Length: 218
Image (cartoon, rainbow, N blue to C red; front, side, top):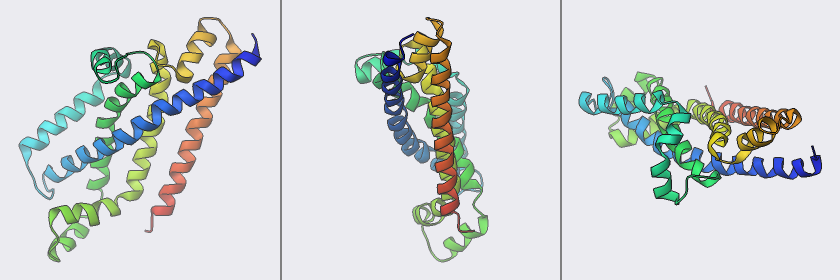
């Protein structure tokens, strides 16, 4: 094993992991938040209850969350090729990562908004606020610490998913662990890859907890 060769590969794989995770997390957070707000607003007791829409959205979210990511990777190969014109590499992996994270984020956002005290919403409505104003100026600000926590959880999950994407040529740390640590039986490379993943997860969790505590004024 030539560590002079492994170190650059480890650094490159870490950058590929960032390239997969960060765009996926940002897009999934935006779309998932919109879906989560819609779920919360149309739920029974929400700002604009609509049982049919709510049940339909709930079913879509549940189906999306129930699919194992490795199966989703394979199912979405035609979609990935249509969007980025390839199904291999770190750029291609952002497509299934984003789609897998959207229902996950939606459920977390829905839960965070439901935890906002009903009295806050009723007070805003009594002052003449519209539904959109209540969502933008009351629900989302009140749920901000929980939303930050949900983003942290989603980001950590995507780091794990990105390692799994290496199994089908997605690049990143997972691909390095499989090609060198598993196929070449180089245990040291496997251990180094796991350590980097652990450091990434711990760093994201620390930053997320710190941000949530800063935003929580209760």
